[in-house]
Length: 344
Image (cartoon, rainbow, N blue to C red; front, top):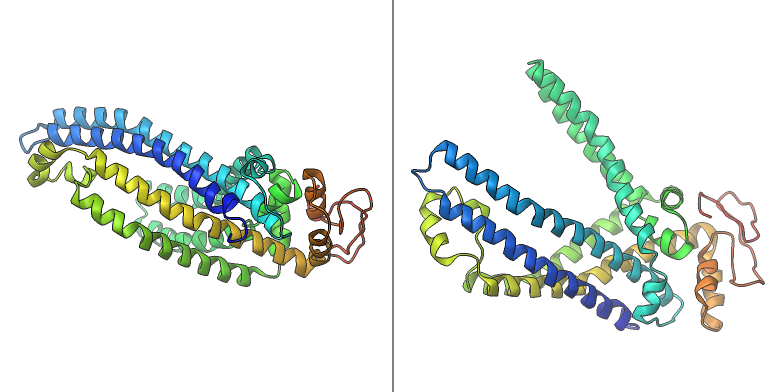
């Protein structure tokens, strides 16, 4: 990150700023909707009127919330893909421009794999939820509670285990040029035998990043509260705060201050998270496939073109370009520019 701050911190700052501006707009619209509901609901409001107001609130609130979530997902996929490419170049000692990072980001494939992983994890929880609901409807309460507790624990453990096994899919997409499904298989193969190590490093990195992000946002959160805070959903049904909400309303200045804090925190933490993932991926490739030889040779050669850079990372290749060498694959077989482990 220090060697190439423009393509790491600068890139994160640009992407997060664009998202922060759009997110602030959605937050303003959401808080306005919440404020209108808070004003319209009083202790004397009838249940029929309350239901009408709540329905109107969700009709106006839900589109902004959905748009915010979609934008967050897309922007994070874009940033992750670009940072992965920039950090991959950094492992060779090469600097890269923001435009160069965009060219190798493979954003559609990163978005695809970012959708596949949650869908896979959702497939763990849905059967548990269905069984619990069926038992509850059948009024078998004790068994429903037992299945719910045991199923929750089992699903949670399986979710963590599978998440770590699939955690190296994005580097496989961006650096190797693998497709989404092949990247998931590739990650599964690379993590095999090193699950606890990768879990520990990922957990520690997550704690550090969360701590840094929280510390950076504290001053902005304090100022945001002092200048007006926001109209939260909790105040809607808190009759004692309705009058205050009606007078104050959402504060645009508070939203802007909060957005600035989020942008700064994400700018500093996102490159760290991406860097940890890229380094874990490279570490597994070095331990299992001797990638250190290829990286060493490439770092001493001329800067690689886009195709040569991707060839360098493909399994079975020790040096890019037409004069490729070969390295032993995970099973000990020697491949000449071929593929293994589900990657192209």
